[in-house]
Length: 120
Image (cartoon, rainbow, N blue to C red):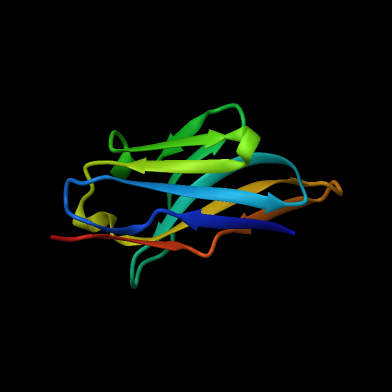
């Protein structure tokens, strides 16, 4: 079992910044990729950003230049630095990780989600 624990959400004014964190724990051998997704009310869950173990990143067009994803492989933790936040960034943000367990099986895990609200 691999668990993901997110933190850092909250209420912020337009133009403000927030930093999300997500730590993976459990029987982990390796994590191939980690990422952030978000889901607004009545909308589908969408990709925000992903990062591989070697540091290759991918961003949704809507967040390019404003959000930065990074990871600390030693801590099995991924971060999302969000700047110049807009009301349309309001959503529940979910962390995701895929990799191998200590027993050699693959895993794909989701966090419980953290609410980000951008409003004046």
